[in-house]
Image 1 (cartoon, rainbow, N blue to C red):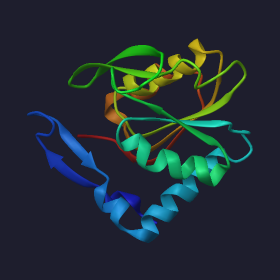
Image 2 (image 1 turned 120 degrees about the vertical axis):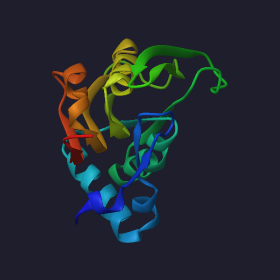
Image 3 (image 1 turned 180 degrees about the horizontal axis):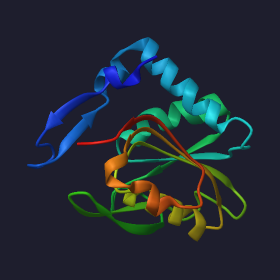
Image 4 (image 1 turned 45 degrees about the vertical axis):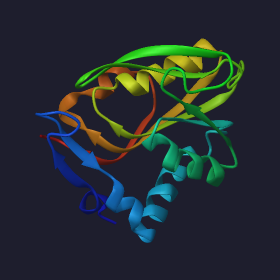
Length: 173
């Protein structure tokens, strides 16, 4: 299935000069949605995934479905101040600024096998922050899975040493 045909470009969002890759049409298409979850899950099979870690907000959408499919738990990584329990945080750079993510300090224990998921790999900052959070708590990143990768932003460089899956790759702006 050609998932790239289910991803729409939104120019100048969230700010001028950014070409946003909108996965909403993919999510609206039952066949494309099922195919996407199945492909992400296939990457996770054999990795003995205990937890899928997904970032706010689009990483929640398929992250929970992926966890369910793999028989794993799901851990949300959220913006600061959104989680009700004690947290650990990691700051990261975006292609258009900086931000940080938090997870509950007891969300991942030593030896927990974690599949990190998000909708998009751009500069790699968000994914690297999630990997750092996993490792800070003693977990093991067993893979990093994306729907879309913007290859021209070279986000893989920040994820060297990790096994990465991207279902759709865009090579230029």
